[in-house]
Structure formats: C-alpha cells, structure tokens
Image (cartoon, rainbow, N blue to C red; front, side, top):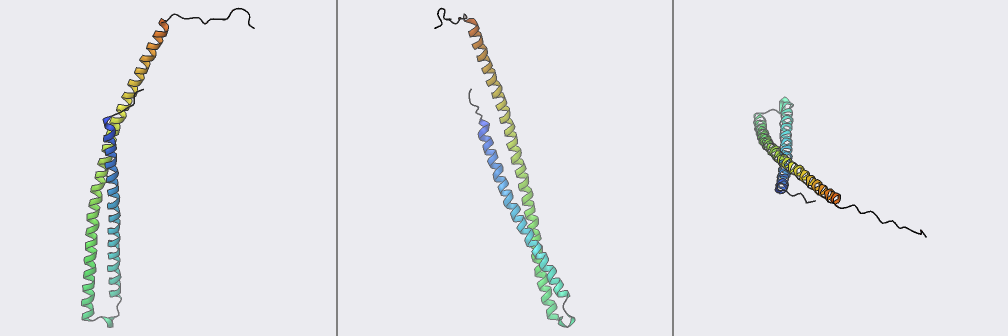
Length: 158
C-alpha cells in the first residue's frame, strides 16, 4: 500500500505552530492584564485608605497645610488610579485583539485539517479500489488455471 502524502501536511503543521504561538502570546497578554488589574485594585485601595484616614482625622489636627498636603496626596493617588485604569483598558483591548487572532488561527488549522482529512479519505478509497482490483485479477488468474489435483499416495500405508 502506498503511503499517504499531501502538501497540506506541512501547511497544517505551520498553521498549528502559528496557532500555538498566538495562544502563547495571548497567555502573556492575559498575565499582563491581570497585573494591570492588580495595580488598579491596589491604587483603588490606596485612594480609599487615604480618604478614610483623612476623613477620620480629629478636628484639631486639621490645618490649612494639612488639608493642602492631603489634597495633593489624594490628587497623586487619583492620578495613579486613572493611569492604572487606562492601562487595564489598553491591555483589555490587546487581549481582545489577540483572542480574535487565536480564533482566526484555530479556524485556519481547522480548514487545513478538513482538507487533509478529505485527501486521506480519497487516498484510502483509491487504495481500497486498487487492492480490490488486484484481488479480482488474482481471482481471475486462479480461475483461469486448470485445477491440479493433489497426488494421493496409493499402495501400502506403512
């Protein structure tokens, strides 16, 4: 039986590798997104903690200088929070784009896989037909030969 070979095999391997690379890149982007989300959550916590501390100051501790320093500190914390929220949004867009790439790459693998499967089915059918033709020829050849009877030994069986 002849071995199946298709030009789609190498294309299939290439597409699989591209899909794996896209999935790896997606994994890295998701990890970066999680880090950005953690930084954002930490910034929110810092803003909340600072706001709570400022709100719980005793009235006698509130001075104009203290108010100005607290406002500047909160302004800086809010800036960090805004920056971290933008980073999360940007990273989310990157993850979404890469997810679309992964879906596209996987679809490409599936298309080539279907073509390869179709070629394998055709090859298998052709191979079976060839084998059947050979069997038919062999049967016809045997049928055309005169049947030789096996020689039996006559005489003394000792």
